[in-house]
Each structure stands twice: as structure tokens, then as C-alpha cells.
Image (cartoon, rainbow, N blue to C red; front, side):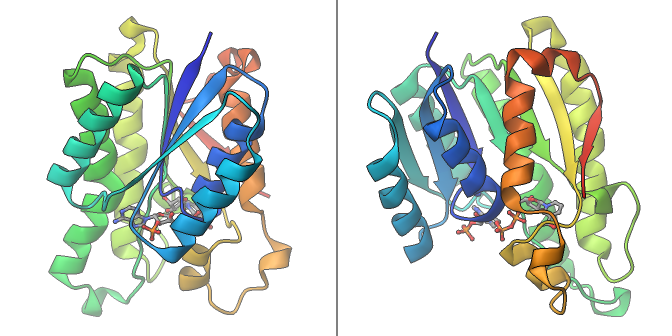
Length: 235
Ligand SMILES: NC(=O)c1ccc[n+]([C@@H]2O[C@H](COP(=O)([O-])OP(=O)(O)OC[C@H]3O[C@@H](n4cnc5c(N)ncnc54)[C@H](OP(=O)(O)O)[C@@H]3O)[C@@H](O)[C@H]2O)c1
């Protein structure tokens, strides 16, 4: 059966690796919808992917700021209309601005919560309210949401909330046959990690394709046997 995957934050890092992995695999997924903000990186990544996917696989790219919740709802409704059903959803877009507690700015805290927490919620809610049922929802949290990290107050708090929200989704949506929940990566070599740990050598930590591979496993028949409320993926 043909399935559709929607990935947010698909311009680079874990999101782009996930979109690429599903698009290139010869599995059930034949439509990959990619959300990110407008950028040269995104345009280039989408163009490259479109050139290399197998025949019969469709890439749909939408530019949207997931922190603009009204724009996100509109993009979700439009894309659902176009594809008919979103079977797999990977809520991956993330934002961080690590600063000491004294310097946490209220507006920036709210932006962190909008992008990391309210956006995944809004996407799930608006798709449900438009009649969509999901096979799998993966909300990308972080190990920083399990244990708070010094200097990362707003990011850690947003990810802790993602873990809890994912547990609720997992329980409440099980009646529709929806699997999944939170997935918490540890240190992964991406642009966001560079913001959190500028001096770290990226070759010493996990790579985005490792996280993408675990997401792919979750969506496979084998994924049914992985029963955890929050899957930790780390080196
Ligand atoms: N890297 C790590 O060590 C690590 C560890 C644990 C969890 N995570 C989580 O993994 C997820 C992916 O991050 P990454 O590490 O792969 O970082 P990344 O390479 O910097 O990618 C972040 C993605 O999020 C998108 N994004 C950010 N703000 C957005 C917005 N307002 N609207 C739409 N898209 C937005 C970016 O797209 P544009 O900027 O192009 O719009 C980009 O595609 C995040 O949720 C992050 O918190 C990462």
C-alpha cells in the first residue's frame, strides 16, 4: 500500500536524513512531504532529492515557519487535501537559544515553546480535525528533556513537555491504531548541536543518519515490537 510521510524541519540534519531515507527506500512510502522555512539550503536539498528518488516516489516541499501556528494549520490542510492521508508524521523541527537563566528572554522562551511544543501539537490536532488518522507519529524530543541541562533552560523544558505530550498522544490515539510517541536523540552532529556545543568535534558523536535509521525501523513491521513511551537514541 502507498503511504505518505510528513517531516518538519526537513531542510537539513535529522529531518533531511529522515526524508531522504524514506524517499530512497523501496518500502511502502511513496510520497514524502517536507516542511521547512524558505532557504537556499532547503531549495537545494529538495532539488537534489527529487533528482535521485526512484521512479514513482513523489517529493512535496512546502515552505512554512512552524512557529507561525496559523500558517502551519493552513499548510497542513492544503497538503492533506493534496495527498489524501498523512500516514507517518515526524515532528522534527526544533529551535534552541542556550543562555544562562538570568538571560532567558520571555519572548525567546515563547518562541522555543511554539516551535518545539505547540507546532507538533498543532500539526497533530489540525490533521486529526481534518479527518486524518496516523499509522505512526514520532515527536523528536531530546535527552535534554529527560535531564535538564545547565544553560539550556527553555530548550530542556520544551523537550520535557514534548516527551509528556507524546505519552498522551500515544495513549489517546491508540484507538485509531496510531503507534509511536517521543524519540529522544542524544548528541547528534547537526547545525543545532553546534549552537549547543560549539567546541565539540562532530565526528566524535552520533550522525543524523543514525537517528533516521531508527525512525525507519519504527515504521517497519519490526517497529511494532518496539514498545517504549520515549525511545532514547544515543551513541
Ligand atoms: N542535534 C542534536 O544533538 C539533537 C539532540 C536531541 C534532539 N535534537 C532535535 O532534533 C531535531 C532536529 O534538529 P537537528 O539536530 O537535525 O538540527 P538542524 O540540522 O539545525 O535542523 C533543524 C531543522 O528544524 C527546522 N526549523 C527550525 N526552526 C523552524 C521553524 N520555525 N519552522 C520550520 N522549520 C524550522 C530547520 O529548518 P529551517 O531553519 O531551514 O527552517 C531545520 O530543518 C530538533 O527537534 C532538535 O531539537 C537534536
